[in-house]
Image 1 (cartoon, one colour):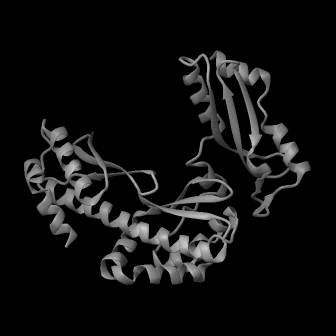
Image 2 (cartoon, helix red, strand yellow):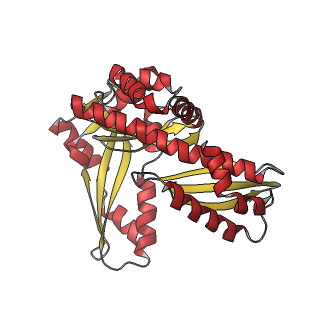
Image 3 (cartoon, one colour):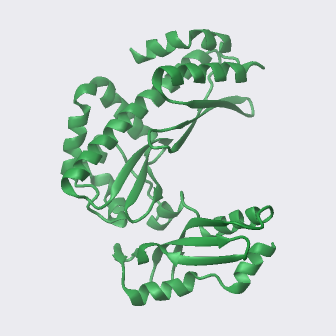
Length: 307
């Protein structure tokens, strides 16, 4: 079993921990990380955080698609080795199961021509959430409950998991909706019911903004970079809620020139999300007016670079 394999593989390092993270923990974590990468082809960065009397082990690793995944687990007294092995099994097994899930969706998309590429991602939050997105791509961060259910399915029926997931995905017809419809109907899709996957009950505008750069975030990045950059360019993908003319969510590209101290904004794909009608707007008259709303004034730009 994977758990036994990991325990055997890492026994020396885990025994050294013994439930107590001493001054040698960095050396121990580095050795453990090297062994896991060699054996399972997954690179995990370990660290610890102290919060009052509690110690948490944090895990950072990149999935198959190059996305940085993070988790933190409380280290229980006198159970350091056991706790770490449990968490490592969840990371390794969960990553393998998610790869099967994404492969199943890729095959479905190839056969149906679904317009949106959906990518499921390792996660441990209470609810599923939307990560990075645009009009052609959506990242779904799985909740702890959904990940545990997927791992359970993987453990009990690894050989047939792909077929089970493919059937549920086909029944769900995921990827044929626009992103607002996908969020609205998220909990009802058979594939998500199979995984006990439920999305946050926050307003859609908050779900779509949480993992993206917002205007204030972009301004802070530019201010910080401008302190050391006197030339060069940068592009930032920024999401903004526009309340004029209705309620819209807009993705825009901020093209920053640090030499000229200019910022040019443009709407991605000349599209906006109409939250009131759950539709994608492409009307030139509406898009052009939204573009005027989100355009940074000369005084705004000057304030950003001079701050």
